[in-house]
Length: 256
Image (cartoon, rainbow, N blue to C red; front, side, top):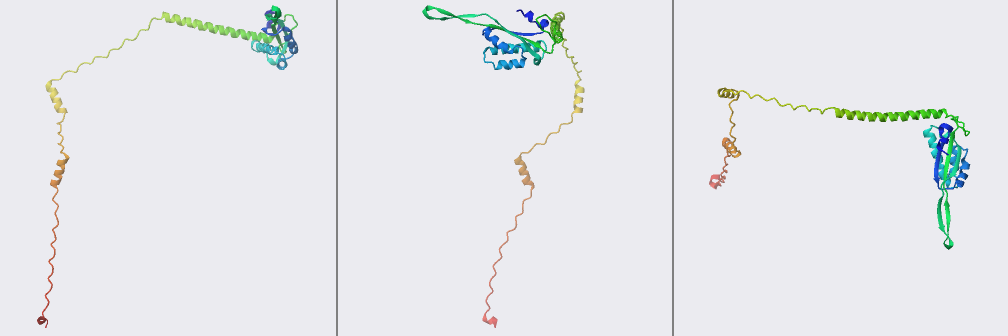
C-alpha cells in the first residue's frame, strides 16, 4: 500500500507506520484488534496493560501517529480515534539449529509492518474508502504551513543576496586613504636681546639676594646663653654664735 493512498489530503486520515518489527504478524494482529475503533486515551490504556511484548512497539506507532496529527495537521489529540490498524508480514530472517545425524533444522524469525490510521471526530471528514476532499481545518493548516515555509525561504534568500551585495561593495570600494599626519608648527626662535638690555632686565627684575644668617652650632648657642646669664649669688654663710660664758659665782663678800 502506497503512502499516497492514505494521504491526509485525499482521505482525511493521519498515518504512522513501523517496519520490520521483530514479531510475527499474527501476534501483532491480536493486539491491534483490541484497540481498533477506540479513542487514543482508551487505546493507550489497553496497550499499557497488555501482556504481549509487541504491545510496546504498537504503542510507539500510536504515539507517532498522534504527534503527526497534532504537529503537521493541527488536530487535537482528544478528538482522535483509531480508524484502522493492521499488520502485514515483513521479511523472514532464517537461522539454523544443528540436529542429530549431522542434520540442521531451520528457525524462522518473523517480522511485521504495523500501520495505524487516525481520524478526527470534529474535522468532518468522511472516510468510506473513496476519495474525499480535504477538511477545512487541513486547508487552513496547509496554507499556514505553506506561508511559513515560503517566509523561511524568502528570509534565506534575503540573507544570501545581502551577503553577496556586501561582498561586491567591499570589492568595488577603493581602499580608504589614511589622513596625512599633521606636522607640528615650527616655533619661531625668540629675537635675541642685546647683552645690555638683558643685563638691565635681570637687574630690574631680580632683587638683591639676601644672605641667610649663618647658623651657629648647638654647642656655641649654649656657651652664649651661659655667658649672658648673670652669675647666681651664693648666700653668705652664717657664723655660729660664740658660746656664752657662765657667770662667775659671787663671793660671800659680794653677797653680803
